[in-house]
Structure formats: structure tokens, C-alpha cells
Length: 320
Image (cartoon, rainbow, N blue to C red; front, side, top):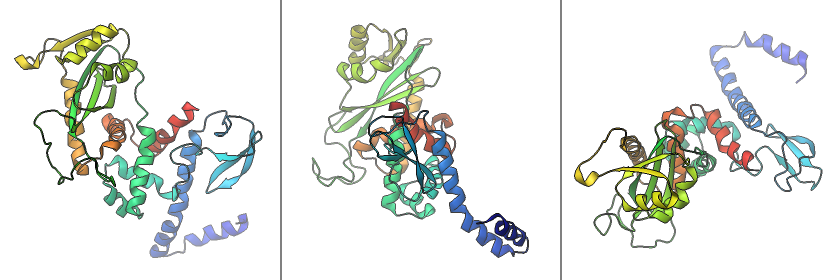
């Protein structure tokens, strides 16, 4: 629109009725939201921006697509944008992303978020896990000082699978055998006294020393003091990794021995289990996404939809 026509339009706004102004605001809201989404995406753009196909940083601008600047690589001639190569690439309805991010920060269910945003439930499910695919990688690199570690167990779920590996059971069913068995997913949570938390799905049944070497060792500072319960896998792991280790003997009723306790990580387990219950069952294959989601919400680490959007794509830019 030319500037003179725009000024004429602005002068007419004052003469609009209340209903007309409301209709005008509703008509502008998607465009304003799209601008906010594009600004949030551009703020995560690395410098220099490289072609995701060949890694070359020589490119030139090649038009704007749905509000986002597009580029053409001078080496391979392919086009790309700041979203290319991220989980959010090729997703539609960008103007609704921030509204959906707000519902995710409120831990809405797939159906409730779809109804509020005005998208199909399948779209809501797809968006949830595309957003979380980047968030789940955003974990602390190191745990230092005193780090507590403990496991929690959830009954394995093949929710949404087309082919089951076992006979179907009713929602909220129980395992066939008492105690911890291969029908339970093991979630290992490590948390230091500053609040930094790493969580992993180690597999089925009780954790082993080999799994601790694979998941826990890379995030522990060499000078850390690892505090656990008396499970033999932790003692074997600490001895082999040459990490200082202390444990509480829960079988004898010992809960706290000075600074040696695992109450912080157990409190995190309780919050995680209570939060997961609102989703009425989480498929085992999506558990890592939900662990990343819970860590993002813990302590309001991500407090705005823009922050959630930036975390969803920022981790992939740093990996290039």
C-alpha cells in the first residue's frame, strides 16, 4: 500500500465503531503473530548462515516466503532459510506457532490445544513433538559439585503403535510380574545442588553399570561427588570411572547423612510423575521428548512462547 493511502486509512480508524475496531484487530492478529514468529526465528540465525546441504557460507537473498527471508547457495544453487534443516521446517500455519507455544507452556493436552488454537488434533500432535525434538537436546553439559542420581520407573507403553509386541491391556493396566521387570521403562535423573538436571531413558528394567557409563559419565565433572542409593550398579560404575561416590542405605531406613542424600532428585521424580499423569499415558518412544519438556518447564527455564520457539531450532543451528 502506498504511504498516502495508508495515512488515509489511519485517519479513518478513529471513526470506526467498536465492533468494526474489534473486527480490524482480529484481521490484523495473524499478520502480527507471523511477524513475531519471523523475528524470533531470525534472532536464532547463526552468523555466518551456512547452507544446510553443502555447508557453504556464500549465498545471496532469494525472496521472502511466508514472511521469512530465503537464500540461494552460490555453491550448490539450493535455496534455504533459517528454518531449513530444523524440526520446524515445512510446518504450516506459522502465525499460530506462538499461540501453540503458549499452550505448551501451560501443559495443555493435544486435544485441548488443538481446540483452542483452531487446528486439527493430528496437527497439534505433530507440532508438539516437532517443538520438543529440539528442546529435548537442551540439557546441561556438566553437573558439578554434589550430584544426585536415581531412577524412576514407568510401565512401558506402546500407545499409538500399529503393531503391539505384547497382548493389549486396558489403559492404566499393571505389569504381569511384581517388582521392576522388563515391562518398565527406566528413567535415570541426575541433578546437582545448583538445580541443573539431566534425564535419560536408559531402557527397560533396572539400570546397569554399562548404561551409567553411556548416559551418566559424559555429563559428570571429574571432581564431582556422586550421591545415590545403595544400588550395586552405581558402586560398580563409580569404581570403574574413578568418581567419588557416597550412598545412603535405604534398606536400613537411612535417608539423610549430613550432605549425603538424594532428596532433591526424588522431589524432581515426584514433580515429573505428577506432571506426566495429566497426559493419561505417554508412549515409551516419546518419553525423551517429555523429559526435555519437563526440564524446560522446571524453574520456568523457558517462560515465553518466543523462548520455546528459539530453543526448538537454536540447538540445531549450533550443531551445524
